[in-house]
Image (cartoon, one colour):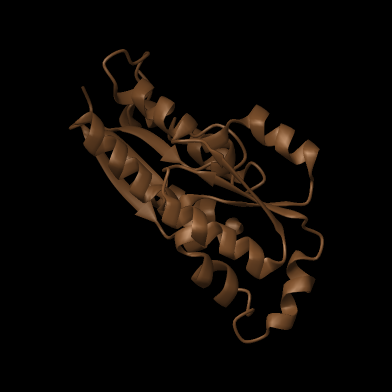
Length: 211
């Protein structure tokens, strides 16, 4: 079987590596792009395209991104290589499921979501990146239309939950937590790499030069 080349958002690196180790998958390679690209989603399609172009011709291709704010431009890039991506608009959909995210959004549109990655890097990606560290008065400007934080946890880790709760308090928002596990990220990779996988994805060579 051809190696599965995974091009992933750096925000999913830990979870993907954990799944690879736990399942003992061998025919897989992982390349991670900087998670900070989420602050510049218009750059994601080109970055993924460049990485896909460098994948071995005989590899199968999978992209561990949702649409991630690219407005369909990422899907257009993937189509050139016959590559599949995670379902949904973003990693929250992948972890919790699109129906759950739709219900959470309907229940409270003003919801700010955290994952394990975002909790671990909250200080850098939210507080420093948005300038709140230097100007705490910016919190209402950025988060005034939010009402709550929902922490979508991948691991049951009391320390991370405490950090998530502290993040909500820092933003002046109510706090809820919902354990998702690895959700669609796990089921998708099991389908592609597990013992009962479905029909394989086309290799990069087959996608570009079909028989």
